[in-house]
Length: 337
Image 1 (cartoon, helix red, strand yellow):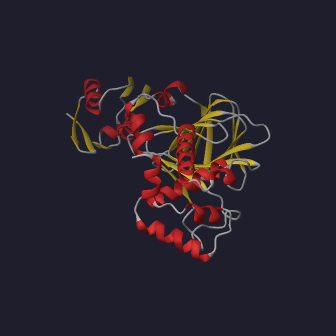
Image 2 (cartoon, helix red, strand yellow):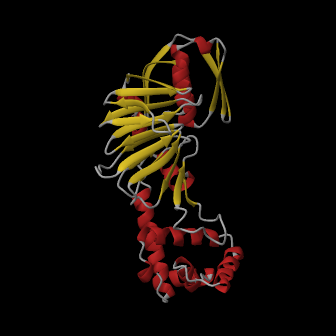
């Protein structure tokens, strides 16, 4: 299907959308847009892409010309550039699955409030990336900051990074390479903590128990609570362990192993079974239950996972430890022999 046919089949009301984005639309034009949205399940997605492209390019006069064929080409081109800039997949299948199929990238705040859209001057437009269990992905923010998202992680950020401070909101595990900008602080909001930097490389991980671990690789990090009370200041190689409102700074035991997941591998260095199991659950997108005796196991494990299947890893663990396992879909149980 050619570009012109796609545009005509969807009957996109370009003039009405253009007027609305320029805040010149009358009620009849708004009603036309609403009717078009209800005409097809595909149309809301098309409108999101149009709004997103307009927000990112800020080229309203050029974008909204009356030639529909030209307009559609600009839209497709803008979407392609945005996806190329924001979602970067590696050659590994799990990363491709997350970036191309499973990773959900969408604008939030667009469909709420009075009217079709909220007042843009009062409510910023956000993009959100959600990574399903068992997948990983990488994104590049508008300021050039690189972010890796591990299994089950979420990243929310404003599409406009021109404000005095660059702020993002995370859950799960994320690895940041923050673009240097001495004039604009970069802040990560995560589980009751605010991590503030200007140009730094660090890993932030929220645990299932509600605790958060911040590990610094390069640069300097200041961690505060939401009221900006100081929690910790980290130097490279240090790690903040925060839980139940209290934090403790310690040496990071093995940073290369800690951040190996961004290279699509897992490295364990003399780690206890419960830590290994926690990483395996996220890596393979499964739920693993341990026999009560194994929860107190003193066995420690050193090995690396690259392309091995879950069963291959469980077989390896059963060689080190006398255990048996059972896999039923996404549920795995491990017991002593």
